[in-house]
Image (cartoon, rainbow, N blue to C red; front, side, top):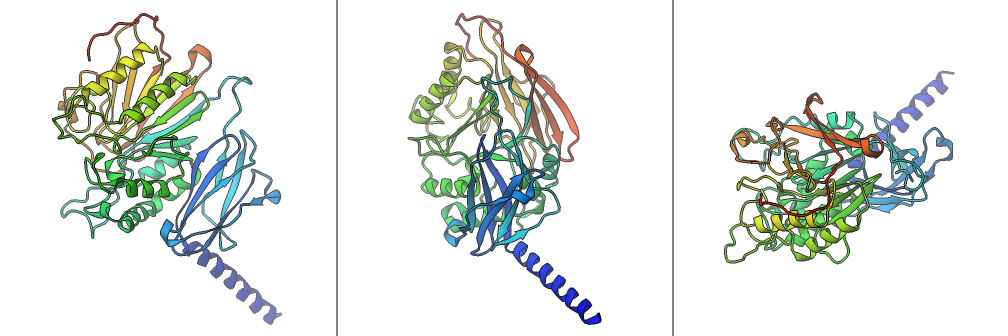
Length: 454
């Protein structure tokens, strides 16, 4: 009897050691990527070459679980595996489990995802929520500037996960490449790997689908533009570490589009084609490039979504000629061109989602019942240093009392039916405590055209 007891202890210890060995191979993730009605992209990063797969099942029916084909992670791809799980049922919640070298990797929270609903021509779109924000600096003392740490309060990522949004949109500066890291693919991979691996992000990555745009710090030096010599490598590494939809055909930039219920998202790259800020011999200047801008215009007109979210880095509506605003550095004519286009095409419920500025504010262009309202919701920063002097900026379009000058995030809830459908935006601090809220109602205006300059 004593011998059997010893054997049982040994078997248990060997099993536990095996499980720990598999988890020790995990660098970061798993992460949920873009999700559709019948498929989802799953992502994981290992520390060295390994076989990665995912087991998945309809929630409550694990005995009929299926397993994806294995992907062998390799150094040249940062040991990252991306696996599309297809053949799923719409509007269905699935449990899933990461497998490394055919062994299950366990976590102290449940892993689930839910596919999108088939609602069009069937029933009214369901309510849903998404998280939004930008500016995710993670300290790394060896490479940081001396003095006070610029990043901090990483618990904000746990607070976002606790809100259980249907998905999350990252608005750029999702990592901060340090000096000269933008010259080397290997150094870029190091920075992303370092920032993706903090424990506070793991539950958020594993339980919420993610979509992301890039900004200057994601792919190059501060204020980088179309002249950056290594921008293709920067975009390559950005695409490695996110599980975004496929980029828009015909564009070299990291430009994407996706839909969720009655909302459509147009994710722009404001760096790849951008003219330099200091360029003075060109008028008008472009931030988006002609090809990307023309795609955006046509896609907005084609879209039948009730809500049209344009996701870009720097602020669009802010009238202050300061830092990364569209009004600054000679890009104001392109800004007015886009506003005019929205007016001429009578596009309702267009909302810009922006970041970069290390503060949060709402800007509103409202010229009365003759023309549609245009919103710009800026949310920043997550864990970067906050901007504490924005109140002095002369933004004529700032909604009164909307300015937040601390680390924060936003949860957008699209809710209601028919003409009563609206957007409720809650702004939270790093601990998930409500700071303030704001509601956007559906736009209503007549179809005449005429405008003054803003």
